Length: 331
Ligand code: HEC
Image (cartoon, rainbow, N blue to C red; front, side, top):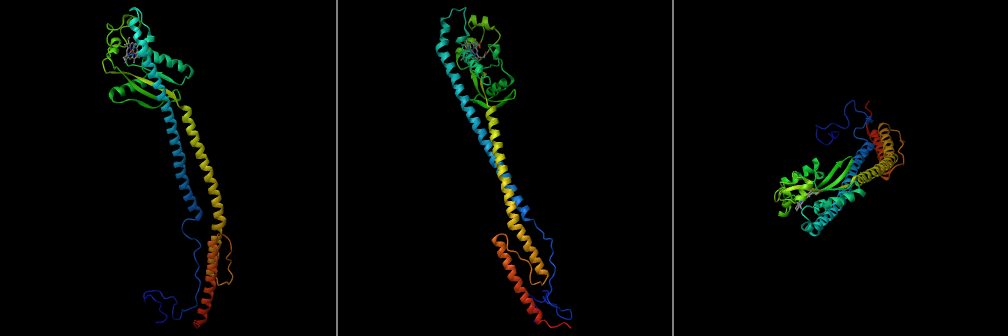
């Protein structure tokens, strides 16, 4: 029973007994180890980190920059619209009352706030062609104020939801990106209806000039049109995309450099020494040659491992020599 290994009778005996009993032997180890290689593993990890950084870095950068560009455009639009309101209020308070002083056969469009604001912005537009300001109405007095399909859509949205204070966003026109801000025009006082309800109520000179068909039939509280200010943002948005692309390019470059350096150092310091160690250990496990080449190279942990294997082999050789010396001759 002394030959029997611990673990019960079911466990396989280490040393076969009987006539086939022979000294310890090395069994060949398969050279084809399974599992992913270090290089592939590191490549996969780096790729995941890279894609994540690219998405969060360049993507996040793009979103933040675009948001900033739009906020700057919105602020500019707000300022220009408040200028428009100021001009309109001034005309309403200081110029419009002069209508009463006019002879009944005379009418000047310079007293109409909606005309004055648009006329002033047309001058602004002459110097800054991409900017525009319009006050179109669904049924306009002046046919130049006929709405475009986009302006009709905006007006209808305000009419559908009277609680809406303003609408803004980006739209494209003739290859340009424009930031627009729109506010509803409401018939807010009975005064409007003097000129916009029925031709009979309107000043005769005005009807003579604009005709009895357009710009009438409006009712109190009705949203009749929109004020739309458009400012160009093509350059700003393009600048945002360019900066994001530059950042993405920089990230790609840094990752490429990191990847190449890391893979080269890994190959020299870890993979090759490990392969050499594996070969040496494999050779040592197959032969009883006293000298198997276990090199001193690579990182500290590998050198420690090589030293440990070296010691292990020496101990193993001693143990084997002892075991073989003790084992009786099978014959
Ligand atoms: C004295 C008459 C008069 C009064 C009062 C008046 N308007 Fe007008 N309105 C006009 C004329 C004339 C035009 C066309 C001006 C032009 O040639 O651009 C006009 C233009 C407009 C426009 C631009 C679209 C279009 O019809 O061509 C809007 C919007 C408008 N008025 C709304 C109002 C509102 C709202 C009020 C009241 C707060 C008002 N108006 C009061 C005479 C008047």
